[in-house]
Length: 223
Ligand SMILES: NC(=O)c1ccc[n+]([C@@H]2O[C@H](COP(=O)([O-])OP(=O)(O)OC[C@H]3O[C@@H](n4cnc5c(N)ncnc54)[C@H](O)[C@@H]3O)[C@@H](O)[C@H]2O)c1
Image 1 (tube, protein in one colour):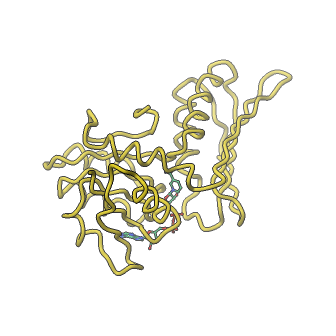
Image 2 (image 1 turned 45 degrees about the vertical axis):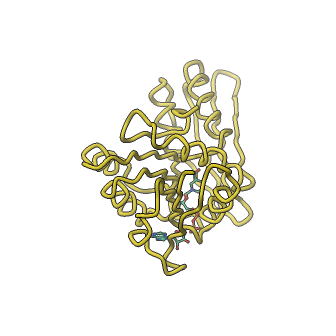
């Protein structure tokens, strides 16, 4: 059994992760950490093989540093914090924890990023529109920033700015629109339920201990 501690357990994603871990036959929900539950991550780190963090841009980096310091594997979905600072912390950490980060755990969003790179080689000019619920703290989304990085690396040209729409009723959505001579090509992914992220989160929990590198970004690396 993999002992999982969920950090941000009272949040929208945290609650969905607790439910998914509870329903996984090979995992045990060892503890729920969240200030609104009166439980600090530091108090329950000792119970974890893997910590799953879906918190806030301010909380994620200290939480993940604490995991690395304790030699506990971490799976992070929080967006809007300094990934380079986490990379440095992970590679210089003495203890044995691995750190896996994905800006999007939904398979459809990962496929959108993969397909975007192929399209960009033939139709480089594009714009990204991302749409999320109105309680999201960061903009543009981590998924949009990662998509832009991947498209640029594939030879595309993502026009600035990335367009961020925040409205009640939305969950997590993204469209990439490519434009060429006399034609456009649009690809879109919609997460309409937070359960869309759970197979990816459980996969990362299962693979966290055996990752070849201390710091890994992107669900595509696990597929
Ligand atoms: N990677 C993905 O696939 C994916 C998908 C959806 C959302 N997200 C990201 O996940 C994060 C959480 O989103 P949400 O909608 O669940 O937010 P939310 O506001 O509903 O939940 C965040 C929770 O974190 C808790 N928290 C704050 N500080 C904490 C700390 N120091 N330790 C532990 N818990 C703490 C809060 O009390 C809250 O309950 C956001 O950054 C969001 O962008 C990622």
